[in-house]
Image 1 (cartoon, rainbow, N blue to C red):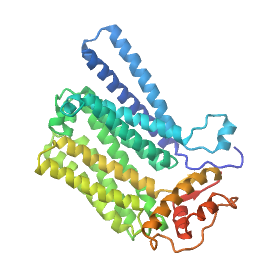
Image 2: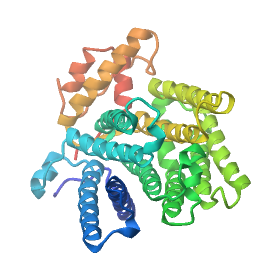
Image 3: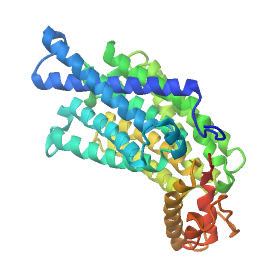
Amino acid sequence: MRGTTTIGQAPIIRRAAMLAAMTAIAFAVAVAVVQLLLRWSGRAIDAVDAAVATACLIVAVVVATVLLGALIVAGADHQPRAEVASRGTLRLTSGGRAAANAAVWAAIAALAVGAAGDAFTPLPGGAVVAAALIAGALAAVTGAVHRRAHRQSAYRSFNVVAMLLAAGCLASMSLTSTGDWWSLNFSTLGTSNDIAAACFNLALILSGGAMAAMSGRLASGIARRAYDARRGAVPTVRALIAVIGVALAGVGVVPIDTDEVLHNVFACGAGAAFALLASLTPVLVRRMPRVLVRTSRASLALEVSAFVIYDRLGLVSLTVFEIVAFALVFVWLITLVVTTHPVVIHELAELEPLVDELAEETAEELAEDPLGGVADGTSVREPAGAPGGPARRAASVVSPPGMAEAFARLTPIRT
């Protein structure tokens, strides 16, 4: 539209990469659905007749199409109402985007439990109850996070990277011929020298490479003046994220049956780099968001606890420890992006719910620590054209320091 500018739209190459990753995720999940249906029917994929094969193909295409649509909805750029109206396109709500994202994550979780169903047999209710609980919990968390952070392009990109890894592992789990792989270690999925191993190793390589390539974007948020990062903090955090990504890719490049020592060096390198990242970042960034500080502490505690339960007590397998350790990496990085990256605002109407949310959070923090905060009590400049608007109303709820912190986390831009 004339006289307007487009904010936060990704370059063509990035968009193409995102679409390719979404397509791969959709088809990986579709493969898992078909494999699960065949398993329930008691058939093997190489022993079905033409009619069953055709039905499987139709199911796979339908599932992949629906999932691809959900992924596109969840990952689409945020557009202002004026631009949507001029183009005559459908306006996507925050709730719709969050629901689409939650549905994909829930499907991946439920199918993963189904693919490793025998591993959940000893639990009360078996795989069915486990699938419902895990999928439900993951849907609730990812939906809430996506509703808040979908305006951040770095978050949307990294969310797809995490999904790509999960979907690749899911496809491998559903196709593998390695038997009870969960009783050995997660890396066993990459040792069968077939399509299942290729899915697992390729997912590690692509997601690890993408993490390393995105390290600059992921770490850039802490450079904002409000967080008072020490000199060298951003390069250090960026380097540690890149090391984790390279190490994750190395786990896929060198399967455990090819060179166990080198494979373990990559795996341990990723774990050590993450431990440094979670422990050093609160020191390097003086005024790091409290949510990220808590996530760092919780991640370190969980990683150490999981290692003790596995290595010292022998209550869980190496697979469980590996899943916990790598899940924590992605949880921490997503928290980093969500809490430190600015939110792009296209319209003043979009500012009110965000300010209200930040006002509530800041009020809670000031109640816990009345003398704390990151601001010096200076006044807050309201966005142009918003006299008496949401910013001024929110300012009456919390103190000026609280509003300064709130606006430090927002980037109001009119298009």
